[in-house]
Length: 64
Image (cartoon, rainbow, N blue to C red; front, side):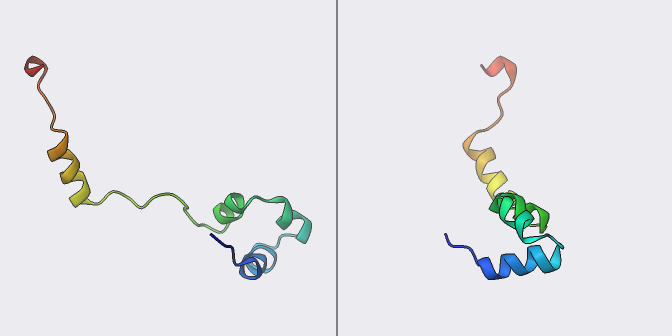
């Protein structure tokens, strides 16, 4: 996975007002967080939840 360093530098230095030294001290994850990128997995869809519920149904305590 490559990074668009030019775009990230513009966003960090121009957009966030970071000094170049501050920009380069950040990890890519920290910069993405500051830019508002979530970086995590997408929320679970209703279809995926239903698929998991079918695969792993709840059991009543007396069912064992």
